[in-house]
Image 1: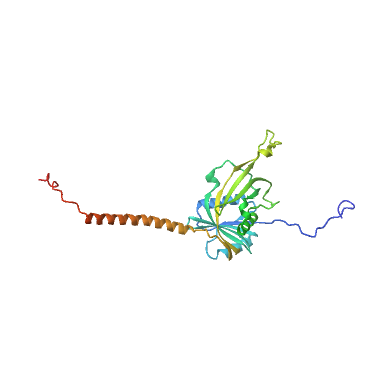
Image 2 (image 1 turned 180 degrees about the horizontal axis):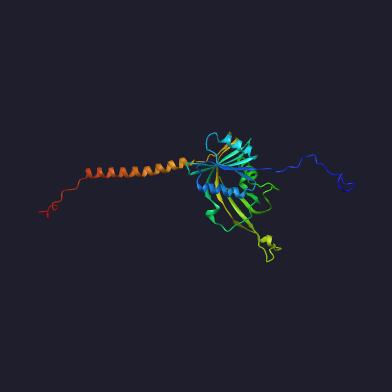
Length: 282
């Protein structure tokens, strides 16, 4: 019975779903400062994340990260893995059962580099927007669901503000996922209130950071397991650097061949002796 007479509490058979998503954000050792700043920018955008110490980038990193996720009472993980102090890979994983995705991160621009005019309150919930390409193929649908669960701030989270003032934009261009963060700017009057028709004049002001995700593989488990999808257009940075070295080596080989051809030409076509060559030496 309720506090009023005749009022009966309604008991629903289905339990109320409560989003308790928590994301662990960490990186590998020997990460460069630009990629570390990018990770800190992502941490500042996600109020429901927990930051942990660096993890050694080895073959057994999957078991270590799954154990860390369980110890920190999280359900997802963002792992920034730096290789050769040049290439940055991003792991998005649902722990402990999976799935997980491995991305190559390109076109990295941190907030400190961009110095854009946009600004939004720290801890406010973002509006996630996706391009229509995400609904065309199954692997894009899976990536969309993983991104929604990791980047979407749960409602009534203790560190989150109860309103939206910025938007995360994920768009697919050339089989790459491009990320942008925009502030939702609404014009205010002198009394600091929104005008009656101010909602029609809303504008988007970019805040940052910017990065591009190139999907490599989708695994069935957390940081491993059966391969669900493999990108056929992916070319590793090592192969790109090897091709550039071969091009440079080819230029040098062309120069050497040109020199040898010139010497052979001079030997096969000697100059005729000049009768006036020794005229002024006497």
